[in-house]
Amino acid sequence: MRIAVVATGEMGSSIAARLKARGAEVFTNLAGRSEASRARAIGAGMTVIDDDAALIARAEIFLSVVPPARARALAERFAPSLARAGAKILYVDCNAIAPETVRAIAKIIAATGAAFADGGIIGGPPKGDDAGPRLYVSGEGAARLAALRQFGLDVRPMEGGIGAASALKLSYAALTKGLTALGVAAGQGAASAGVAATLRAELAASQPQLLTWLTRSVPRMYSKSYRFVGEMEEIARFLGDGGAAQIFLGAAAAYEDVASAWAEAGAATPLLRDLGAVFDVEAAKERAS
Image (cartoon, rainbow, N blue to C red; front, side):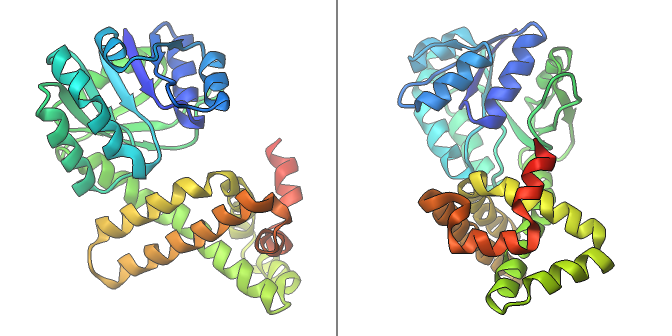
């Protein structure tokens, strides 16, 4: 099977490596991408085709795995090549976006004559021989994705049409990444008030599982926080105009603060030092290594 994966971030390159290791042909386009992206693609064994039309002509399935804010732009970029290629390819949007966003992307792809499936990835990038993340898929093209199981992906078709897989992904992310954002707020507040050590001690005594989870999730989030900004905004769009949506607009702003701090000076910035006082960044790094 011939599969195009765009782009080659941590998740995209890891999925590509799994597919390649299990016998699929995997392609990508690195035009305009960084040297780090190129290194990940080569490390994953991907064949690089830096021409959109040539990439589409080679592939049977196209997996879009980009930050949420770039999902629609990627579909628009590849639409002309998809139209020229005809209906043979299946375009799968695997991004953390709202159902209304994915339905808008589905219209762009439908106009090209290509097939479309809505995808939602739950779980971390595949590593070694682990089970990897779950790829929930919905829409008319979802059944074709079951073929990727033989290449090591846990594909789970679901009912509900286009938007269902995205709704599941965002509902899940509202809990997991939403909880991490609450950890950021609690840690920042405790540190600014001088009670970080006491909060950590209380969590260790009364909420040990929560402290363990946050000690793992908060520091792991720093380098990816820029991606979470768009994801929180998509969750807010998903939830509509009610008060719950405002929670996730606030979470988006919190992740924006973390992303700016990380880009400025990494864990040495005051915000991330404050979070480390509660969530023990260095200990978490040792456990994750």
